[in-house]
Amino acid sequence: MAVIVNQAFEVLRSRLELTKTLQDKVTSHHTAVREWLGTNKLTDETKLIGSLQRKTRIQPRAGKDIFDIDILVILGKFTSWRQDGISPTHALNMVEAVLSENETYEKMGPETDSPAIVVEYTDKTKIELVPAYLDGIGRGPNGIPTPPAGRGYWVP
Image (cartoon, rainbow, N blue to C red; front, side, top):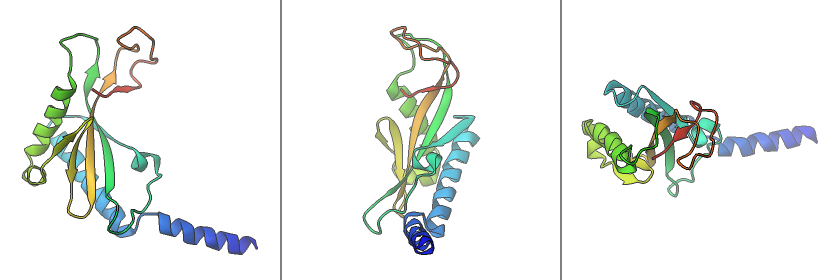
């Protein structure tokens, strides 16, 4: 009985996991865009977030789903709450401008879908770049503590 359950589980799992072909595309796409952003000094650090980071990704349904790759783009350290500080529009524009300097990404037509810049590949995968700043304050604009400083991110 245990063998049958194990076999059934393996079949179910194999249907949910990404195919090698899709996994290779996903890896290629996120590596290329992350390298481009780093090469152009927009950021020293990017992080996979979402299902790729949590390792909970599943195979999209053929012809129905678009696989999204979520990337946190760390633009610096957020150190003060000021009215003349960083705006969401400014952060999004910075990411889109650097992305559009690459002819390939520019032709893909990056679009803003707050809080992200989105580019979609013809192979039904898309990348969502989310600009963020490392929390160097440790409290919200209302003074409520958000400890510890230096471990979280503010997404404008």
